[in-house]
Length: 392
Image 1 (cartoon, rainbow, N blue to C red):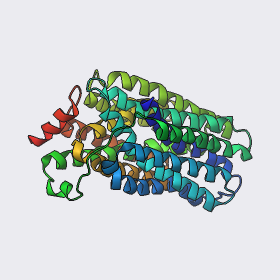
Image 2: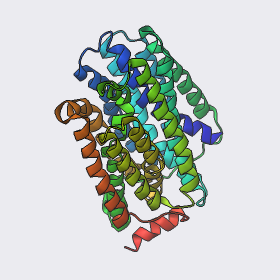
Image 3: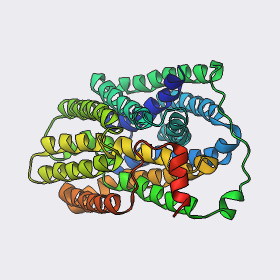
Image 4: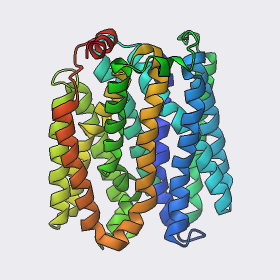
């Protein structure tokens, strides 16, 4: 039951990220008439996420994980209700901001909590459930958009997400199994003991979290229907249906990652997955847009999608894990926001081919970074990983 309560937050992360892709098409027919307005509504979720990170960084190591989840679910609920009832762009933005604050908090709490309650030989797979439920949320977001057949019905998915958030809130408040608390840690400690055991994992985590975003995944997740329409590949209905296919591939391949992450290790999955993402983008550049996109999504789902969160939940010392993971997640969401705010403008400036060329460049950097700097954490306890950095 405790896993389910945590993973509802993961589901809502993915749902909120993907559901907007179809909503944009319907709102484009009503009162979101410019790409700037669309980018503001999409990007406001990320702005809220930054606020959520600042919020969770202040108390996650002081008051435990349960309070973080309770507040996150309350914000998910409030944001979804406001968005579903809004008739103005201001209401849409505020609703997305509230949901974003919840995402910022739960993006840190969920994988970290899962890592702390898992056995070392199963930790990779269990933490990968966080990404699996994110992809499940993404899939349901796409599917709900496809099932909408009239403009006014775009509110229904947000009402449904409010109901799911209410279930998570009730479970987090009522469950008697949430007893994970930590002794208060002085804020100055993290600066006073800024040795290798903190410095190296912090830098590795920041770079890894950033690379997950600048390699382009959320350009596809946010704007998949728009990209299909932009390329003249599909009508509105077919574009929405194709985005459901993206969600299905993302979901299925994440299941494979859960199986292999504790058997093959973290580094091989990252390297092979990055190579697959490059091949997918190249196929798209040569005109095989649908096939290339699906290969890119499949490769991401077996590598960067789950493995980055496994690493971030593993490499930080227990005493500072909450705050250090918050820092890495901040950079992840920052570059997520950069992608959200610039994708449509970059397509206008350099075209889809130029945009994909940028993603290929960062994927090559990611492969080199993984091979040269990332340690393999497979089969090690959190204490063993922490001690390994102290010996550097």
